[in-house]
Image 1 (cartoon, helix red, strand yellow):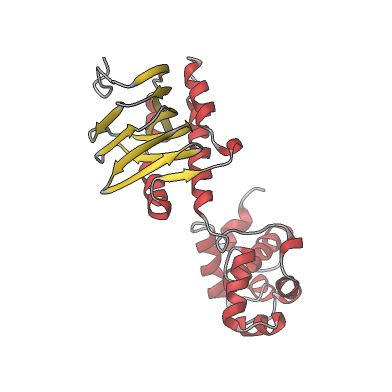
Image 2: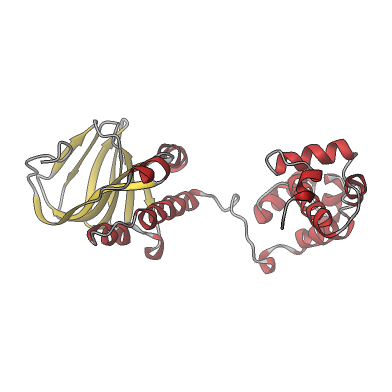
Length: 287
C-alpha cells in the first residue's frame, strides 16, 4: 500500500485507476513528471486531509462539487473547474454531494515556480476551455503503461501554461491580429518602421497617436504587449541582427543605422538581449 494513499477512503463509489507512473532519473532531474492519477466518483462522507507530500495535485471536477480548505481559505469547486494545490501545505477536501473528479499528482524541478506564480495570480481555482484542459489526456497516457516521460511532461507543461495564460488580464494580453489594433497605434508602428534609425521619443509617438502620453503608453501596451520604449528597442535590435548577418557594415555603422545613441549603448543593449553575445561575436556565429 502506498504510504500517501489512505487505506480506507469512505465515500468512494467507483474508481478508474489508480494509474501509477515511474519516470526515469533523467526525467526527475529535468522535467515535470506525473506520479499517479485517476478518476473517482464519490459522495458523502468522502473526505481527505494531507500535509506531507512533496508533490502537487490537480483536480478536474467533471460533475458535482467539492469543498476545499487550504492555506486558511475555504472554497468550493464546481463542474468544469480545475483546482491546483501544493500537497506540502495542509489541505482538506470533501464531497457534499455525488461528485465525479479526475486528478493527477505530479511534481518536477520547476513545478514549484509555476505553482507559486499561479497561486499569486489567481489562487487555487481555474477554468479552461475543454480543448485546453489536458488532464483527461494525461490520465490516458499514464493508463497506457508506456514509457513516455517526455510526452507526459509536455502535456503537464502545456496545461500549466494554459492555466497561467488564463490568469492574464486583457491589459496584459497581446493581440497579434493587426485588424484589432486601433488605427492610432498602427500609425505609430508604421512610423517606427520608417524612422527607427532616427531619434524617437515617447512624446513624439504619443503626438502621432493623438493621445496623451499616459493614455498612449497604456493603449500601446494593451495591444502590443510591451511598452513603446521596449518595442522600439526590440525593433532596432532585430534590424541590427539582420544587418550583422546580411551586410559587411561595421558595428559602429550598424549602431548608427539602427538609431542607437552611441556604439557603447548599442553593444550593451545587444549583449543584454543575447545573453552576453556581443555584436562582433554574433556576426561570427553560423546561421
